Length: 231
Image (cartoon, rainbow, N blue to C red; front, side, top):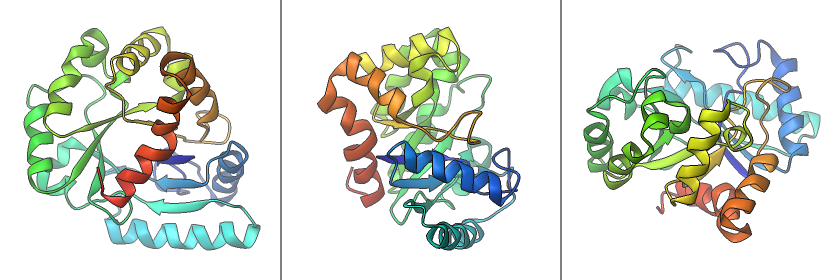
């Protein structure tokens, strides 16, 4: 499986505080069946540019390799829309044109479709992170449709499907999935125990909702297409 959203870089945001915490997360992810994982620290919270993130990812990958952890890291970022289109475009998810787009946790701005459209117009693949946890979308899931029509992809947190973020997020996530408005599942992992980097439980929930073939696309086929820039 491929997890395109995880806060595994140590000591940069609200992910693991140190290397030991990052190693524990990596072992948990590998045991869950994840083989490729994107390290996506909060931007601008982490204070790092894309080149600095990539350098830290390379350092962490070297440690994983020495420890015999079968996990391939991809450099990315969880980018707040407060940076605007220009700031968002400074970050990438892997080598291709995709990027993670994080709207405010409090609401979905009215100008959200325009921002997604502008990113798409500039050749980017904007991935909207965890909209099921956004109060504006949870109240009215149909609000996600203009973002998709503008060129956005939707990434739901795997744990949302199992109730890990409460019944409202669970209901919204399942509704979005049933309607075909979810393109990716990701862990949004932050530690080995609290919000772990795991996809398998969410995948099982997705299988019950949309079938095995469609569910597999969310954690294998679609994330690979995003990384390849072939969406």
